[in-house]
Image 1 (tube, rainbow, N blue to C red):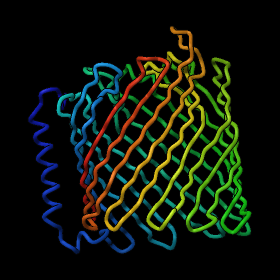
Image 2 (image 1 turned 30 degrees about the vertical axis):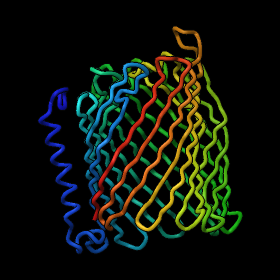
Image 3 (image 1 turned 180 degrees about the vertical axis):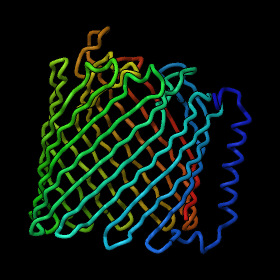
Image 4 (image 1 turned 120 degrees about the horizontal axis):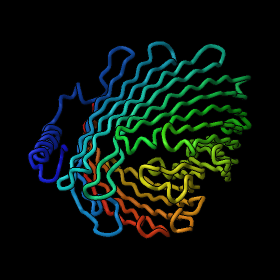
Length: 402
């Protein structure tokens, strides 16, 4: 296995690559190439690379016998933006994240992601959006000596909308998601999911609109987990606003039901989501987001013994402030996961409380060069003691971009 314990040659190679990137940045870059995007007519390309070093005191997120380690990461990528005619546009983002651990090579990872979208602004207020995102990655190991679970996932999406009288908008959307694991043991989590929905948007004020949305989703597992095949219905209303230049957001509330047809069982819950941002000053921004919904568990991680589904409540808040070339940020989130059925062995329902906080600072040394450091604390507290863990993580990074 690449990056196995004691493979010092690979680690040394990555150190040299990281140091080389940093030295290149500090020595300078030609102004005509670093001052902005690479432009060719309507085509803009923004290449970038981030190299970082990270220390974690709990590499496998375990309650006992915690393993500390240091790892290096290199993430190159590019953003492509093409606007050949009017407001039509094509977008492509790609990155490849490679990390190498000093001691526990089984935790090394390599994740590639490509996201493409086509946005057509057609005549008579008709708009068509097409997109596809493919990811090649792996679920991390759970303990020392464990192996990763490589997978490929793909999400294809389509959205058509039409606006009447500049006040009423109708839309329909469709998405297809699939996930395929490489190893036979993990293939139990392979699935296909199809989601189709519709929306009605009515502008009630100059900068505010009411929403009414419906979505139907069907999930099919391809191997032993077929008993967990399900479909769901979600209906919600909400409001999206941009009342002032400083405050904008979307809040939704409604109902979701998830039916497992082979089990003849239905889970239902109040659905809610929110995304809000507020500019306290021109340099200080506060954001708040959250969601409440029903999710499936993972069989490959053995979580399905607790329950095939759980209700998750998630809230995230952050505050950022920019002073000249420095940007500081603090934030935190809280997650409460309530598994909906008794554990098969313990005879009780699992409950998880996750607290996470972070703080960081970025320094835009040049327009093409950013330096930064970040600290993150995570505490998962569960009524199943073997799921508890605490992690402290600190990292520093250098980003080069044109």
